[in-house]
Length: 160
Image (cartoon, rainbow, N blue to C red):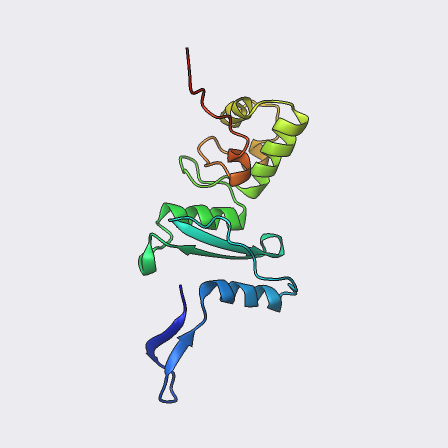
């Protein structure tokens, strides 16, 4: 992920030089018309880092904990794939909520509907709900996006 020299022959007596993953994403975005500076990594924690350009059309993710063997069976990789493709998590799955679900949850359920985070989460589990959450690909098992999680109330430190 860090880039640099490898032990792979380049066919000219040298070795292949790899571009760091973050630079690679930036150059792909430029090839598709992006003219800004390099994206901030969001998130950038112990498990993963993500660079996103052009409204999500160019996304690069490094799974820090998985090393070179992280594949599509890893939950973090599945979450990233489902989120990028903006498809719902398969029933019984526990992947990240899609961006369409996140938008409907925040703008529709909380914004227009005036419901609380908890009530909106309850609506996601209710197949008979009049809200458009299921139409936006929301499933009860999906993991909150960062935007959704920011609206989650803090637990009461002094429950009585």
